[in-house]
Image 1 (cartoon, rainbow, N blue to C red):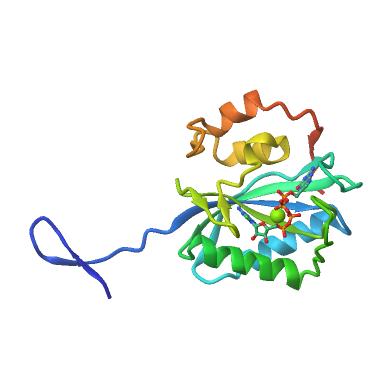
Image 2 (image 1 turned 135 degrees about the horizontal axis):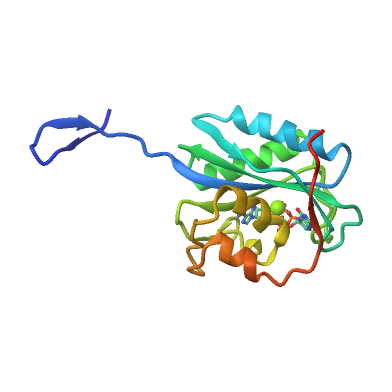
Length: 181
Ligand code: A4P
Ligand code: MG
């Protein structure tokens, strides 16, 4: 157990402050709604992690090489996993769900895609992990569900709120609310 010292010098246990993380979920193959829910269930099962809230599901016109429309959503997590550890777990979930990466195809079709959008106010610039997600502010299919959960959260590199980014995004691809089934 870690201890820190209070101003009055008595030792008090170090509290774990969980990381606030937003994950973008996308699926455009198979039963897209079921894939989305399965991914959420698997994320719920990760160690020291809970889903605080999830957005509505949206149907979105594909951006890039994919042909069929996506179902997109965003979830808010509280987790004690570090971003690198979380990325590994998310990739393992993608693989367990049967996602195949097609070499040379950028932004192709996929059963499930799990992207870390924001992690606290961290800026991470590694080859394997970039946070905030480098494309998030250009994509209506990310900003619309994210704005349901975090309209006032500031993009740490752009210094603008999610709702401002949504109001000014130039993305003309269509995104519509998917009716609850
Ligand atoms: N990586 C780096 N930063 C991150 C991060 N913040 N979160 C690395 C997750 N991964 C991150 O990703 C490639 C590598 O990015 C990973 O190995 C990881 O180390 P990937 O999932 O293998 O490949 P990808 O998803 O095809 O590539 P990319 O560039 O991540 O694509 P995106 O940005 O995920 O976009 N259209 C609609 N309508 N809706 C969509 O959801 N999604 C995409 C994929 C394209 N078009 C879409 C949608
Ligand atoms: Mg991805």
